Amino acid sequence: MKNYGPLVMYTSPAGSPAPGVLYARAMQTENGAMYATFEQYTTGAASFPIFESTNEGETWTKVGDVKDTHKGVGMRWEPHLYELPQAIGNMPAGTLLCAGLVLPYDRSFCEIDLYKSSDAGRKWTYVSTIAEGKAAYPGNDPVWSHF
Image (cartoon, rainbow, N blue to C red; front, side, top):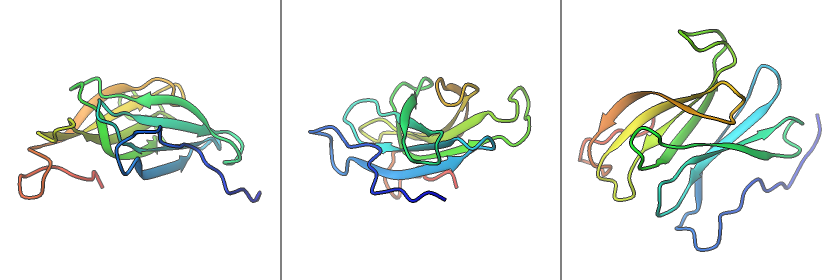
Protein backbone atom coordinates (compact mmCIF):
# COMPACT_ATOMS: atom_id res chain seq x y z
CA MET A 1 0.00 0.00 0.00
CA LYS A 2 1.28 3.44 -0.90
CA ASN A 3 1.46 6.22 1.65
CA TYR A 4 0.05 9.56 0.44
CA GLY A 5 -0.44 12.90 1.99
CA PRO A 6 -1.04 15.46 2.78
CA LEU A 7 -3.22 15.83 -0.30
CA VAL A 8 -5.75 18.55 -1.15
CA MET A 9 -8.44 17.43 -3.57
CA TYR A 10 -10.46 20.67 -3.58
CA THR A 11 -10.26 24.19 -2.19
CA SER A 12 -13.38 26.37 -1.96
CA PRO A 13 -13.28 29.44 -4.18
CA ALA A 14 -12.65 32.78 -2.45
CA GLY A 15 -15.90 34.31 -1.24
CA SER A 16 -17.75 31.00 -0.87
CA PRO A 17 -20.24 30.95 2.02
CA ALA A 18 -19.02 29.29 5.20
CA PRO A 19 -18.35 26.48 5.89
CA GLY A 20 -17.28 25.95 2.25
CA VAL A 21 -17.30 22.15 2.12
CA LEU A 22 -18.87 19.48 4.33
CA TYR A 23 -20.05 15.87 4.33
CA ALA A 24 -17.34 14.33 2.17
CA ARG A 25 -18.03 10.80 0.92
CA ALA A 26 -15.82 8.35 -0.96
CA MET A 27 -16.14 4.86 -2.41
CA GLN A 28 -14.15 2.36 -4.45
CA THR A 29 -15.67 0.44 -7.36
CA GLU A 30 -15.20 -3.21 -8.27
CA ASN A 31 -12.66 -2.20 -10.94
CA GLY A 32 -10.57 -0.28 -8.39
CA ALA A 33 -11.49 3.28 -9.38
CA MET A 34 -12.19 5.58 -6.45
CA TYR A 35 -14.86 8.31 -6.40
CA ALA A 36 -15.44 11.17 -3.97
CA THR A 37 -18.02 13.92 -3.55
CA PHE A 38 -19.10 16.48 -0.94
CA GLU A 39 -21.40 19.39 -0.19
CA GLN A 40 -20.04 22.62 -1.64
CA TYR A 41 -21.57 25.79 -0.29
CA THR A 42 -22.82 28.45 -2.68
CA THR A 43 -25.64 30.98 -2.84
CA GLY A 44 -26.77 29.63 -6.23
CA ALA A 45 -27.92 26.18 -7.28
CA ALA A 46 -25.38 23.84 -5.69
CA SER A 47 -24.22 20.54 -7.18
CA PHE A 48 -22.18 17.60 -5.95
CA PRO A 49 -18.80 17.51 -7.71
CA ILE A 50 -17.56 14.04 -8.65
CA PHE A 51 -13.84 13.35 -8.38
CA GLU A 52 -12.15 10.17 -9.63
CA SER A 53 -8.85 8.50 -8.82
CA THR A 54 -7.51 5.59 -10.87
CA ASN A 55 -4.25 5.29 -8.93
CA GLU A 56 -5.39 4.39 -5.40
CA GLY A 57 -5.96 8.02 -4.38
CA GLU A 58 -2.54 9.37 -5.36
CA THR A 59 -4.19 11.93 -7.65
CA TRP A 60 -7.79 13.03 -8.21
CA THR A 61 -9.55 14.51 -11.24
CA LYS A 62 -12.94 16.18 -11.33
CA VAL A 63 -14.97 14.18 -13.87
CA GLY A 64 -18.54 15.40 -13.39
CA ASP A 65 -21.23 17.09 -11.32
CA VAL A 66 -24.51 15.76 -9.98
CA LYS A 67 -26.88 18.62 -10.79
CA ASP A 68 -30.51 18.95 -9.78
CA THR A 69 -32.27 18.52 -13.12
CA HIS A 70 -35.57 17.61 -11.42
CA LYS A 71 -36.43 20.73 -9.38
CA GLY A 72 -33.62 23.01 -10.58
CA VAL A 73 -32.79 24.41 -7.14
CA GLY A 74 -29.63 22.48 -6.30
CA MET A 75 -28.17 19.33 -4.84
CA ARG A 76 -27.14 20.88 -1.57
CA TRP A 77 -26.68 18.46 1.36
CA GLU A 78 -25.62 14.96 2.37
CA PRO A 79 -24.45 13.22 -0.82
CA HIS A 80 -23.86 9.49 -0.91
CA LEU A 81 -22.20 7.39 -3.65
CA TYR A 82 -22.85 3.73 -4.41
CA GLU A 83 -22.01 1.24 -7.17
CA LEU A 84 -24.62 -1.36 -8.16
CA PRO A 85 -23.06 -4.81 -7.66
CA GLN A 86 -25.68 -6.37 -9.93
CA ALA A 87 -28.22 -5.23 -12.51
CA ILE A 88 -31.40 -3.65 -11.14
CA GLY A 89 -34.16 -2.88 -13.63
CA ASN A 90 -32.60 -1.12 -16.62
CA MET A 91 -29.42 -0.26 -14.68
CA PRO A 92 -26.54 -2.71 -15.29
CA ALA A 93 -24.06 -3.79 -12.66
CA GLY A 94 -21.43 -1.08 -12.25
CA THR A 95 -23.91 1.81 -12.52
CA LEU A 96 -22.94 4.58 -10.11
CA LEU A 97 -25.69 6.07 -7.95
CA CYS A 98 -25.71 9.34 -6.04
CA ALA A 99 -28.43 10.25 -3.55
CA GLY A 100 -28.61 13.63 -1.86
CA LEU A 101 -30.80 16.40 -0.55
CA VAL A 102 -32.37 18.78 -3.06
CA LEU A 103 -32.79 22.10 -1.31
CA PRO A 104 -33.28 25.69 -2.48
CA TYR A 105 -31.06 28.32 -0.89
CA ASP A 106 -34.02 29.60 1.20
CA ARG A 107 -34.66 26.04 2.55
CA SER A 108 -38.39 26.33 1.72
CA PHE A 109 -38.67 22.61 0.87
CA CYS A 110 -36.46 19.59 0.60
CA GLU A 111 -36.40 16.18 -1.02
CA ILE A 112 -33.98 13.32 -1.38
CA ASP A 113 -33.34 12.52 -5.05
CA LEU A 114 -31.47 9.68 -6.70
CA TYR A 115 -29.28 10.11 -9.81
CA LYS A 116 -27.40 7.51 -11.86
CA SER A 117 -24.32 7.45 -14.07
CA SER A 118 -23.51 4.75 -16.59
CA ASP A 119 -20.27 6.40 -17.76
CA ALA A 120 -18.09 6.37 -14.63
CA GLY A 121 -19.46 9.60 -13.16
CA ARG A 122 -19.20 11.85 -16.20
CA LYS A 123 -22.94 12.37 -16.81
CA TRP A 124 -25.76 11.99 -14.27
CA THR A 125 -29.46 11.34 -14.90
CA TYR A 126 -32.39 11.77 -12.51
CA VAL A 127 -33.86 8.41 -11.42
CA SER A 128 -36.45 9.20 -8.75
CA THR A 129 -37.43 11.15 -5.66
CA ILE A 130 -36.94 9.00 -2.58
CA ALA A 131 -38.65 11.25 0.00
CA GLU A 132 -40.18 14.72 0.19
CA GLY A 133 -40.12 17.13 3.10
CA LYS A 134 -41.27 20.58 4.06
CA ALA A 135 -39.11 23.58 5.01
CA ALA A 136 -35.67 22.36 6.04
CA TYR A 137 -35.69 23.47 9.66
CA PRO A 138 -36.16 21.25 12.72
CA GLY A 139 -39.82 21.02 13.64
CA ASN A 140 -41.11 21.67 10.10
CA ASP A 141 -41.17 17.98 9.00
CA PRO A 142 -38.14 18.07 6.69
CA VAL A 143 -36.29 15.05 5.35
CA TRP A 144 -32.62 14.75 6.19
CA SER A 145 -29.98 12.15 5.63
CA HIS A 146 -30.97 9.21 3.42
CA PHE A 147 -29.20 6.76 5.72
